[in-house]
Image (cartoon, rainbow, N blue to C red; front, side, top):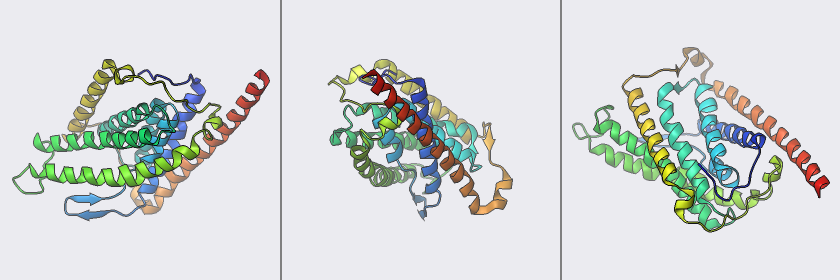
Length: 290
């Protein structure tokens, strides 16, 4: 997955980007658990995730490591530490979300271009939600999941999922994706990169779509998407493993959520502290070279 126009970064910087995305998005996901949810029949209105966090990091930094870090953060802090890890079934969301955020990061040639940023945000969230919608509809149509809004009419799931898709695009895509990303990108660009000892991204030269989204990348994406679908179908058919849902967590009640929140916050503070030190060291090196 080559990234045209991206500056070379060290392995330590890649790891910093990964851990920063992991802790920041993991912490944000935990706070979404505290937000209220509204249910109207089979339709649920809620904030799925704060999309602007991984999108901002994918646009400003290396999109691959930022996307992977965000997905891992959701699994560690939002699932494992919360005692709600569904094993093989988690693979679907991991692949879909990583691909979506990675593609969104690739789409932005110049972080200072608001039009490119806005389009990338909508496409990124749209890919994630569309893949999830296709899988949910497929589970009903193939008889793997028995949910029917109208008894005997599996076609009704299409209307439900269509409404859910629009709802997610409005809430996660616009309210918690597009608007905050357009706000944060120009304010963070050129200011957050030095913390990791990196230079801000320069605008990539104009290139055709085939130069940065190759046939190889498309084939890999389709293959990963197929794996995600198979994994989710197997999980729904109880062909599952590595499930982590301990019963002892129930005795702590809702107050338990503050434990993973504290863990994510501690990791975030540590990584920011290390990043600041790395940035200062890099400045000293650059000043000596100059």
